[in-house]
Length: 316
Image (cartoon, rainbow, N blue to C red; front, side, top):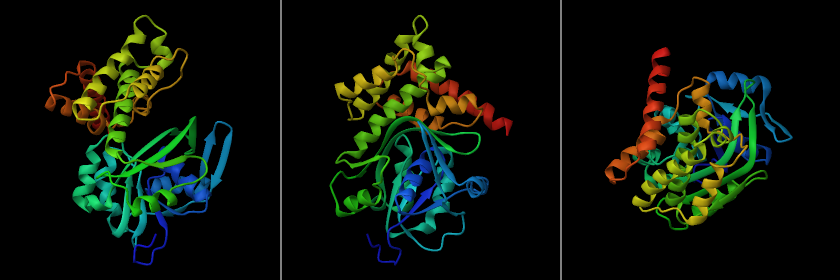
């Protein structure tokens, strides 16, 4: 892919945490021209230890190419935006010099609100929809740890039509260690992942435990399906109903006995860190109100997370 600006097939990964570190690391290991845009504290860790991907019997070490905000001097072909929603506004400012007329931006954020912000700044023609499915975290040493085998990346044009650009980006973002695919309806795919994210997030945060812990107590097995019914109703009202097979899969995930599965939101709460409550939960319940869909369980989870967010902010 040639942007016409002499950059070649260059990829900028914004953020080298659990998601960006995993996918960017895989691409770098496959020989792609990958640079990570990171904050100083993350740069220090990666400079000292390298980018390490561990877990499930794996120990991969990559010496990443790093760059800081203000050091970008020319556009990149693809920008993978892998930051928390709370850091989106700053990330947009930091990455602006990397976006040229031929740049494709692929956001890894959950929910839908980020598309509006990216479209407003860079134009919808520059922004692809993206869905990633991976279970990873960053441990105390700063290493990316895999928690489950699943690793998928799906991209698509917002308008839904196939394009030469989409095929080229898909090829550039293909590497051993994860599956890459394109879809003609990325907006629906994003909605369906959103349903999954809020379901497991609300379940584990409301009940304060793993799926196995929750379903192992009286009444616990009913909570996950109840939350899922609310989230799925919002998605359906927005024009993106979940097929029966996907509903069955999520139901199985949130009712599996003995499962140690938790959500990233729950892990952030336990660690006393900020969450993406407004972007992921608040936006969904706001859309539910506009669509006249009742979501009492999701409303309660959102309120609980807002209290946590306020407490976290005031402690800083």
